[in-house]
Amino acid sequence: MSHPTTRVLAMLELLQANHRMRGTELARRLGVDERTVRRYAARLEELGIPVVAERGRYGGYRLMPGYKLPPLMLTDDEATAVVLGLLAGRRLGLPGEATESTLAKVQRVLPAALRDRVQALQETLGFTLAARDATAPATAALLTLAAAARERRRVRLRYRSWQGGDSERDLDPYGLVFHSGRWYVTGHDHRSGEVRTFRVDRVVSAEPGDATFQIPVDVDPVQHVTRSLAKVPYRYDVEVWLETSLDEARRRVPASTATLTEADGGVLMVTRAERLDGMAVMLAGLGWPFQIRRPSELRAAVRELADDLRRHADR
Image 1 (cartoon, rainbow, N blue to C red):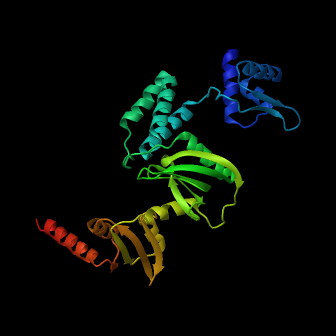
Image 2 (cartoon, rainbow, N blue to C red; image 1 turned 30 degrees about the vertical axis):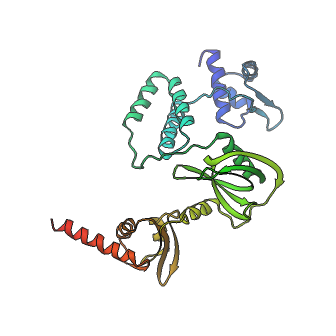
Image 3 (cartoon, helix red, strand yellow; image 1 turned 45 degrees about the vertical axis):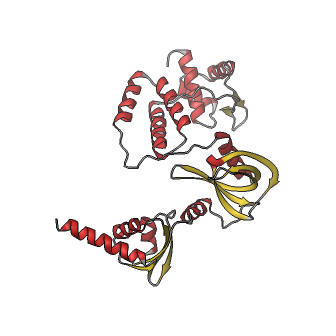
């Protein structure tokens, strides 16, 4: 780092990577004296990057959050981590436009050699996880709900249902949950008087108010969202007793698809299904002995699956 400009940028990188650094440590890392460190801090301020110099025993230098994001100084490993995170996020179903534009910006400024290697990784990387068709929420609504949940502040929601009808309601947001390519907010809905779950991409607007609230100690937003989704109405109500432990059942059966409780030395699985042939395949795939409690039509679906398997085996 023989050139002063290189050392100034190196100081910016160090300050971004550390909450606060002593002047002596900066001088050691940059290979200069503390007077030069003070000069570099002044140079960064001239460039519009707010550097705060704190005096005293625990003083030092730190970056003050400004109105604009300062230029990020990323190492090769950090830049690669950003690209990989964006690629994985795209597969999981994170908001598409922001993901793609950020990925393009990072790739444009990568050094040529690293850009070529990252491009090779992008072209050859495969995923076992199926791609999600994400529905991106409005960024403003997402950030407003997150801030309101952290500050325990009530919000006025304008919400559009799946049928297209608009409604207004006051919500005490308990937390945000990302599940299967969609964002959800769960909280106390003052219109219904119940804890409800709403899809954030259907939130037309969210305005924070002055009223505050307390989150009940027994509320788990993730658990509430998955249980709410498991209760979406389907054609059949299903109850099946599984000969296994509750821990093992929870590892194999997602909470979003069924409710699991210990019963009669095994596990009672309660869920809903639109098609019973798919439920029969699921039971066969679990590999545990089971007893069908309802509906009786599921017995016929299991027998039909067994007959199909025998026919395939005898070919």
